[in-house]
Length: 402
Image (cartoon, rainbow, N blue to C red):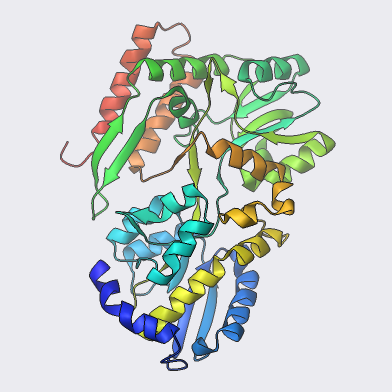
């Protein structure tokens, strides 16, 4: 991949400097989420008008969401789009599948300067950026009813307030995405490394530790509260006073809570700050054999992820994706968004989600199921450590060649 970009760089720089302006032609295909298709078409039109050296290209924008786009590119790169949006946890797999070319050299400095640190980390593999940050709004935080919850910074207080009001506190304890809020917050870790074929080659896990026991005990105590409800979907919540969720549920929660709507970072629990995963939407460029087309794709990707376009994307009422660009994040209308403000504060306690084997999610669901069934309510610390030792050993068995 690096050699491919290397032999193209001289041609690309010549094109961008105007020495071969207007020489390119062909079709560029872009895959974006359905609710962003019209917006993207408008931005493409603006790009082509302002960049006449690429006027020979026509651009087709197609509605293919992040998950479907990544899955298609992993199985059939050749028939995939030239530019596509994907979630950051797919980066290593897409690079291994030769479905991404690294960011053009002339855009790297601006990317690193303008994007928040987590976004820069999310696009980087082996020291090189392989995609353009588009959003910084995937993660979770606390929604709550300000007329019920008096102290959103303390989980025990939240639960007491919900119990007193006869209202629910929602958290999905069976999800391997939400569980790390407790484990990572308590100081335990669980990460995997993948090889070029996408196989898990190494695992680093410290769940079987005093920190892991502390996290598991805190989850057990949370589930024992009469106010606890297992779940993380606002559309399925009833009588909810607090919920751990993401920005995708913002409109639903606002409509539910009205003037009492509020959002905050996750609370403290039993002496530690809840953490978890953070995530980003990225725009990738597929490797090209035509240097003129590669130059056009790079320039278009940089345009669609520029701070101005990220802000415009957020200001579009039907989209409102949270920017990864630090200047756009500082815009008053973005700052006024309670959910995004809570998420930005929460990211300081989170790690960027990497790649996890499919079996991990099943393993985490089983652990959560046992907590929900109250199997460990009266377990000693030694017994909980044995539970987590089994969990850690099983998680390690997913590593290739284990």
